[in-house]
Image (cartoon, rainbow, N blue to C red; front, side, top):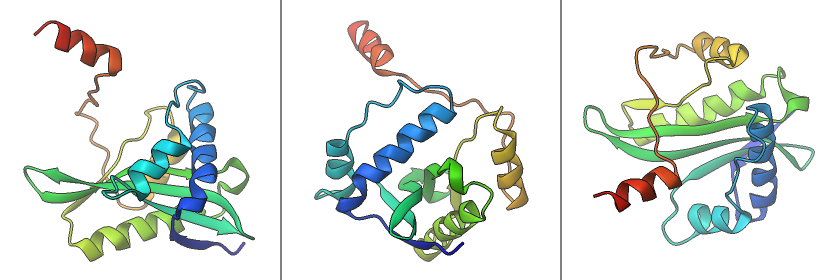
Length: 159
């Protein structure tokens, strides 16, 4: 199978959102996605983009994405964070994940970052095996910490 990988454009937001929703179903949280096409346009393609997205096409159809953003590590400096690497179900196992990860790593290298990082669910054995096969290290002694919108509001209300 031949794929074309390129930077996402405004015209791609519908397909990007569709893949985000497909990932939510795969991760057993089908109702968790609240981001909209308008959000993707505003925050990815507005005056001050907050993310960069690579898309993979086959025969003009977007079948995978890698959405990344730059963050700053107090220990390492500028870092690329891979928010999601999503390959549509029909194209998993085709080597497409490797092609997208290659683009992310080449992009990070071109920026001179000292780290590229991401999370993976502990039950997603195929993804864990994939990332470890690429030389990634899983930090099993760290917890992912988050506050959702309700927690943020409750915190603010109590300070």
